[in-house]
Amino acid sequence: MTTFGVHTGVQNTTVAELRDLWVGAEELGFDAISVWDHLYSSDLASHECLEAVSMHTALACATTRVRCGCLVYCAGYRHPGVLAKAATTIDHLSGGRAEIGLGAGWAEPEYAAYGIPFPPLSERLDLLAESAAAIRSLLRQETTTVAGRHVRLTDARNEPRPVQSELPIWIGGTGERRTARIVAESGDGWNLPFVGPGAVAAKRAALLAHCDDLGRDPDEVRMGVNVIVCDDDASLAAQFGPRADALRADAVVGTSVGHVTDVLGRYVSAGVDSVNVALRAPWNPGALERAGAAVAALR
Image 1 (cartoon, rainbow, N blue to C red):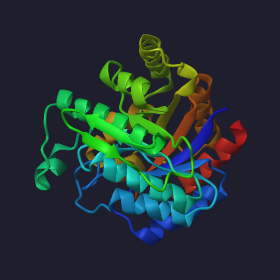
Image 2: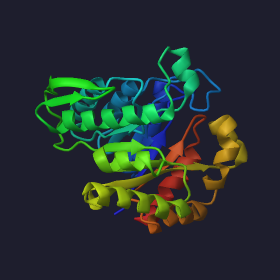
Image 3: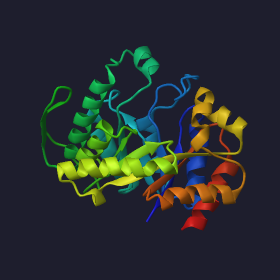
């Protein structure tokens, strides 16, 4: 059964606004809510952005029912042991509703501004692979030892254990060669940002091939997408800045509940397990309500 979430950017907003948005999304019947991990706005047009672990924690404390996640934490910004401990603590705060996402990272100006090394993509993907494997072990095994190029742990213990015996790990990105393989190796889900329904079949085929190669049961891995829902092109530009034109083709633009229902339904028909409605400030309650009505119609 497809689940539906709301993916909330934490740029150009306040904690109070986000709490109101999260509570509203939960009341509308969404199954999950997530934040993201950036140091500046994701379009790099603004420097005003709240911190991800803190807001993931706030999300867990502001809600009572929804799954609480981050899509996705940048593997280059925090040691995997720190992220595993944070996810475990958030799981306790939420009563077992936490999920964690991991990605290779791409926003080079953030790295440069904060003095974080920005190696070539191949090395960032290597770090992602090692971090995902380490976090999976820390969340599920009694002790973890890793002797990787980027991650080193020696009999590391993550205590107390998470409330969930298998706290879900999502891997973010669209790459069919390396990213999909990391999903098959260490992920419980593959988060695809801003791809159209027509792209899902190829992504699914790539994931199935990696699962087959590794002996992983593909039924253990969920596939999720982030989908923009907004009123019009002006609203899209206000929320996504310089990236708006590139994202327009697969965004759900318009004020018709029927149109939103139709597009989200295409993802369901394509076999997507989780559809996340992506919203950013300036917040548009009408877009959230339309998405909620569409989700109710698709149940």
